[in-house]
Image 1 (tube, each protein chain N blue to C red):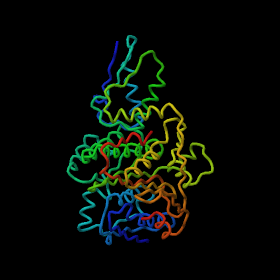
Image 2: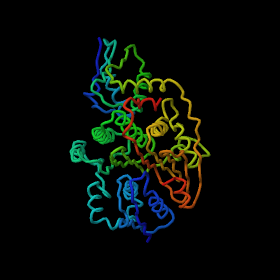
Image 3: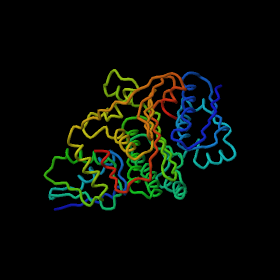
Image 4: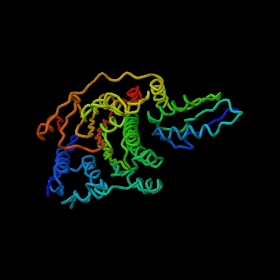
Length: 291
Length: 118
């Protein structure tokens, strides 16, 4: 048995990522049952919890992960944001999902939601409902466009590339910024390139290729999703972490973007943590970042 | 005869995926008959269009071999901006960013987190 003590303490971007590393390393290098102990977590941001939900929902990991000390105030909060169960929008009608979301009109967050990973009308409807609710929470026009674009591009990537039946999303709105986490446990960026016939890549070079706009779909007009996201967040301020395979791309305020690779703690699929500055110039044209 | 396809009536205010662009243009084509000369795709009431949707729509229109003209009408300013940017990209091979991000490889948690700055 391996115990990972979850010790998120602040709302800093990607706070708690060290715990994700510990869990992934234990999953990858042992056959142990892994206990995630939340007793030391003094601040719970839904965005930092989404990776654990995504892992727990995988058939090969579900029996190995256990969450403990989710009681008291933290436990109540987790129940509210639907951790670790999430709202399953795959098996719900869109009317049921909209009814569920109506309970969050006055909240500062979108609860953890499992959505269809395939390219389906149901997925579009779920993401549209989530995006529309986030839009109603934001007053700044360009920020609304930015958030809508980020969600649509990153969830569209799941449908186009991940080859998985589900994706996960959660969001938390703060005073000047919005945090979003989107995850899937699909084939990941490297395998997507390999399937497209590209040879000689590893996780880091695949991530480098995706971030500079290369696409596994050999068509004009492709490859803007991730590269456009990076350009936009670089200009607006905020943060972007994209984890696929054993490589992590990170860009955050005032720090040069980079890729860090550790083969011992891979994420099978894609995990995106996004922080968007929602207090931005009202004349900014978001479309320009995708041209 | 001129036709009009009201996007928001069929697809709502948000259009976010390539699939919905294909589905929408398929419905547009279903409207067209022998007497049609022009079809307007009317974006009145649509509040958001994703770049992927726009790109796929332009591809669908470009691959539609017909004497019928297709016109996009009533987009909001933001949607128009996006359509213009996407249209440009949909017809030209793009230039990739020159940037290659530095890669740091490690097997130490301390270095991993330090490099990430988290």
